[in-house]
Image (cartoon, rainbow, N blue to C red; front, side, top):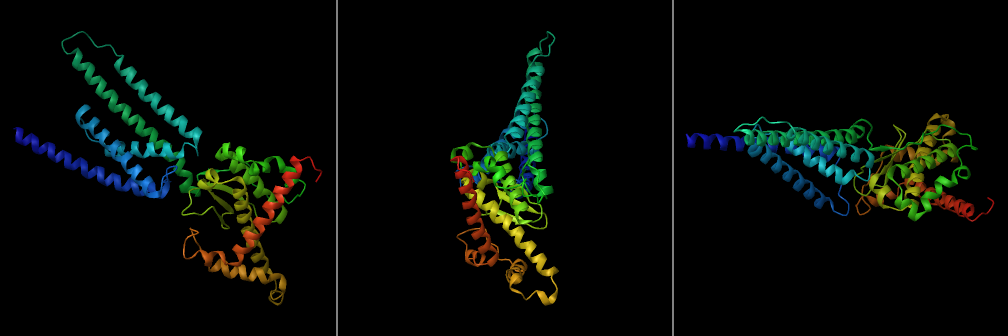
Amino acid sequence: MDREKSRIDISRLYDSLFWHAIYGILLWIWYRVLLFRCFSCLTLTESRILLLCIVVVSALLGYVIDRFIHKKDIHPFINMMIGFGTYTVLTYIKIRPLLVMILVATSVLLAVLNIVLSMSKRVPESENRRKISIKCAKKAISRSKSIISLGAGVMIAFIGIPSICSGFIVKASVTPTLSTVSQEWTVQNHLEELSLFFDEEGWRESSLTTKLDTCQVLANICQAEWGTNELNVVASNTSGDIAGTYSDNEHLIIISVDHLMMDSGREVCNTVIHEAYHALEYRMVDAYLAAPDDMRGIELYDNAAVYMEEFENYQDCDSADSDDYYAYADQLCEKHARQWADYYTFHIENEIFDYLSGIDC
């Protein structure tokens, strides 16, 4: 009898390890593609090790609760979701603070309330009263684990679904514009908002949303003054050392979350202008393609012809240390975007300096 029970226990252990491994691999791949980002001050390898440790610990704790406390079926998915949720809280608390705090507080509150209500039930006087109370406590702990896991799943879904559907984590609350009315979207009319880029302390203490809104204001000014398409500024996890990218198909300026959180406002200002200028380059290509064949050879369209060829055979690069960096940086579209970003950033900085100094511009 004991030997048979031992075989069953070993079989259940192997079965549990198998399903924990399967769910762990699937969740790891899914999380890595969808939401993974390095933990602050840690390298990529260190961050992955931290995530692995958190997931393993949560799986072990969940297994102990299922196997030895509640003594019911093992729930590997629920156990591991708590680990991924914990890592999400640690890495996204500064990015989506309100969402994370609300869901964590709600999950913990419901879990505690579940325990309190379960333990406050009146148990009739009997010889088994102690056993019944212990049984209620075990059920309460198991349910609380499920509640916290559900909260983690909801949090990951709320953060991850926009990333799946739209390719970004946070979108600016300032509305993109199609206006070309210079009196509305000009540097002069938005010096207060733009001054945040050059206020080191103010930029450092601002929330991600506030920084992103300032970027959208700048993008609106670039759109109105240059006559490009609408420009939608969003924040996302980008690969390598990429600070920002421009997608002409979706009219998106994608700014790296790490760039927004870690780098100076002046650098971010430069990035937004750089990516906005790419939109202008695409419009130059459109004008070149729309021109009659006998007009395409004039000097006006020389740059546009080069831009078109470069966009068709674009040399991408995700790191300044990459062997491909020089091929990327030597493209005319990138040279012009860098030159214009440097010039326009300097122009805005001077306008703000004059404004703050009380000089009539």
